Amino acid sequence: MPVDPSGWDDWFAGPQEAEIARDRAGKPGLHVLGVGFAAADVPGLLADIADGGWDTSAGSLPERLARHERFPSPGGRRLGFELVGFDSGCWHTWTCLGGLVADVHRATGVQPGRWGLIQDEQDARRAAQWLTESGLGDPKVFVWAAALLTDVAGATLQTEE
Image (tube, rainbow, N blue to C red; front, top):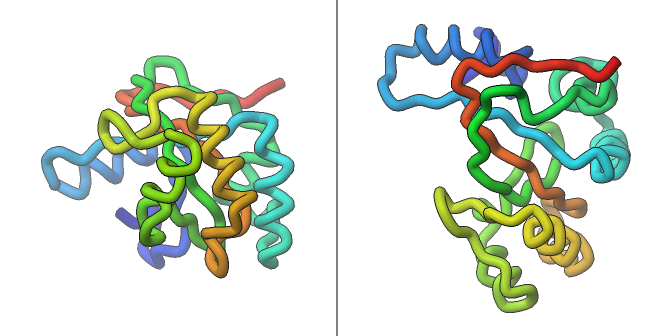
């Protein structure tokens, strides 16, 4: 669901804003998901976003990555990892670019499990590294990362001091 009426920002400022939007949508079964990246992956993600012409201080996810917000939020239920990459202002998953899940499985043995997510962090990071090195996301995505997804369930965001 859109963050604001113009629909330009794909990321809520925090779980509370997302919960309010979820409640207002009036659609049963919607969940607020938290998304986080390993600190070691953040510099590469920010460089890739900047290479795409996006200002990392312009708000939304790039700015939050640059601030090193802590994740996961307290109270969130860990769901697993999704392989994602940035392209021209939006994010793609390995499942939206045809055949990548099968390619990764053949090359690394890693495949999605529960909820279509990779359950082991090291497997997810290894799969993202292989996918980046393979170049199979070209021309959409060049840098892939393992994003941890949590079911927020009323959790709160914190920032590092």
